[in-house]
Length: 406
Image (cartoon, rainbow, N blue to C red; front, side, top):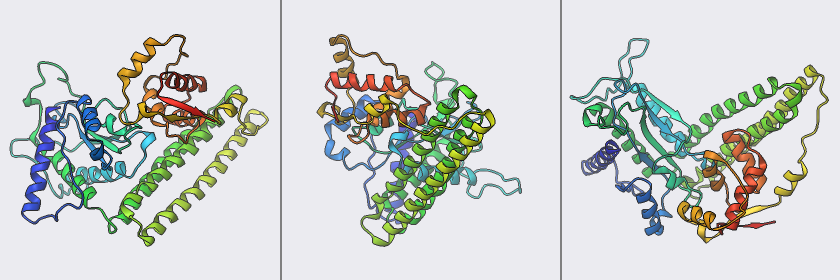
């Protein structure tokens, strides 16, 4: 993680130098650089300065960013926010990372990189990068937490052959890699800090087009799950497939809506946003109708009678129960207090959500029902028993972290 601190410090130096020399205009929004202990320090900062935390609109978490890529057989990863916090941020950063990679490679046409970013003492490795779904494990979890809700991405190089060993020394780092990460960090900071009306159409284009790609992938998964279903599980597969597509459209709608932050009441830009939202809703209807056709064709192939999508009694019951956060669940989640309360209480319902537990908390927003939380989790992690989600919510209620309204 020391390389992340180096990259943050160098990014701050570069931004100041560029402004001092008049090469970029003064930033319209502040960029705050945090050097604090991993996770615990970030949580303490958020708790101590809530008035500052409320003004945060994006977070870039720089973890292990400086390793030599070829030496570690590694990629530079841009890790996106989880499904509970879809926003413009991932697409903006992904676009800049894509640009950086393109400018560092020699193309098939024989053209060399347009803007080679290399250090005199570093490698000339290609900029191998990947965009990855959320996994957690670093400071961005604090910002993403449902009680904080700041969109975040993480920069990290993985794998690291010397991770947590005595061989984890500066010679495993690459000054070229660090330089490229600083370029990406500085470009991201400048764009986000200065984005206004002129940048909104570009942000909308990035979110919309990259969102179309994500929707296509979810559609593919949904369609194949129906086409591969056997007679005995066809109806259940269809139900999960419909949920997969429906949740994907909800996320893309949320991502588009997040661009409102930069619009600030400008009517023409609001209409551009609304136009894309309407188009997205129209595409949702078409997609769900097509998925129904796929289901009916599969029913015909398997000689199965199609059934209507309906809620089962337990689903109906839990669709009416909405968990609401108490004061205990405002701000970053106090996992230590939660575990202590669980030890004190007896006969708590059993649950095991694994890594989906973090997102189960994040989806609690005072609007989603227990059924809706389960369905959002199922789209992100695969089918999850409704009872497991209900039991987790009941434990949160008994430990004083949520109340339940009907």
